[in-house]
Image (tube, rainbow, N blue to C red; front, side, top):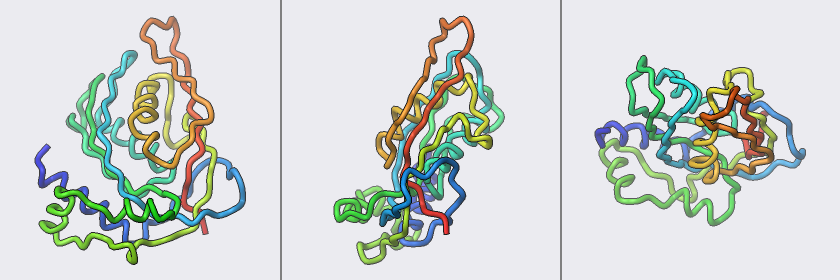
Length: 208
């Protein structure tokens, strides 16, 4: 991927830290009724997906990655796939950037306003003002339990086991997410595909 293309997407996501990210309806059950003071932090991920049981269109993978992140509270999700839109593939790489809710602790605010040389260069090139601690927006959030394979809009089934495994292993561990139940039997040797299960508790923006 060319640097300037990803820099544009990254700085777009960076800009959301200091500005309001639209609150969308998040599926799932509220764990408790107490709001948590939260902030947005931009996170970047490299995601590798290799499926054993079926081929996916690149556009379908793009849509599902974005949808899964939205379902666990992320906003302004940017996904760049290694494959072309209509290509069928059983292996793909993706670069992902998203604004994710984190507790508004002093440590998280410092992390949200600390940028490496690449991010600073991208911001200068695109004339995006990087946020300072006083710019960081705080908002009410809550913990929700989300059963990802039960979210109708995601259309996740047995063929998405490796996608869920990759999201869990490579992305969820770096977000405000706690895994409640996981049953991901993705072995190619299974006689019949088993519907995957991934239930998480995620910190999500509280709906008005």
